[in-house]
Figure 1 (cartoon, rainbow, N blue to C red):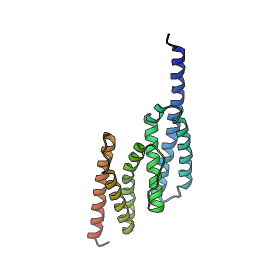
Figure 2: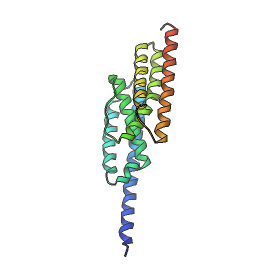
Figure 3: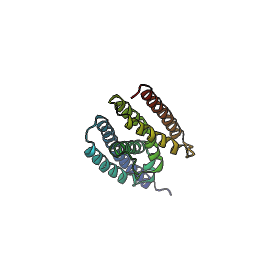
Figure 4: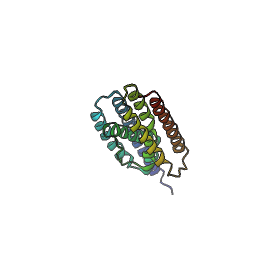
Length: 184
């Protein structure tokens, strides 16, 4: 005979853990957005990044309670925003992209979102006349796009984001050309 009480208990426990996951995902998402905004403003985002990393570790602890948790939408969104924020902070601070321990799909999704933030930064830098940094950003986006093209993505969401990277690269190429034509 099926043990319905046990099934009910397991489902209720999953729901409790899922609610914790959703709340912690919101915390990671909020801190990630704040970190990106702080980096755009030129503020010191180190403390936000540290908080974000602490919250992400707590989120991963919750997610490990069940394999299904890793495919929850709230976890996926938080993880990719976390990756985007860490990569953006790293790039602006050091000029390089850092490795981040998250599922590969979520890393790629966050990486594919990064060029949008880099384009915003480049436009700001162009306005300040920092052309070498603009070119460095264009080169980074070109590298990201070139690496992403080596993958065979079956997921529509990832393919759409890779297409967005292509358009971001085109924007950067146009910006650099415009700056060169204006003699900057």
